[in-house]
Amino acid sequence: MITFKNPDILEQELVDVRLKTENTKALLLYNDDVNTFDFVTECLIKICGHDSIQAEQCTYLIHYTGKCVVKNGTFVQLKPQCEALLERGLSAKIEN
Image (cartoon, rainbow, N blue to C red; front, side, top):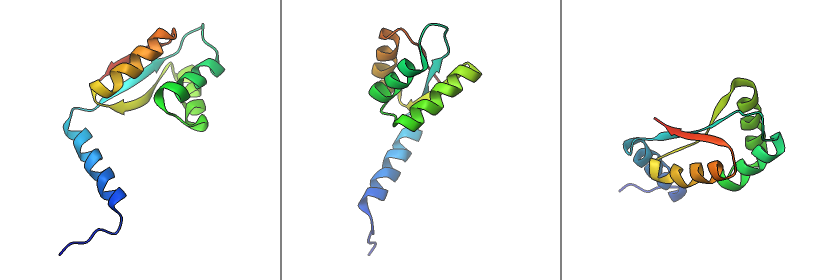
């Protein structure tokens, strides 16, 4: 008989396996000369569910490298977030 010590870990492993088999995509956010660091950081927190540190790190990567993967998931999961970023005037796109 197999017993699991922590059912949350098992659930996370099942989610990870499911995402890998559902053709995981990347939500990219691109640099622009219009939006401020604070605005981009705020959008990442509100739309993508980042904590403040993760949002700031992504914002710096976007600024210095031109783009950053801000979220991974299936197309269905990422589409509403991509649309919300675009509605706020940010440059975002879903890629393989």
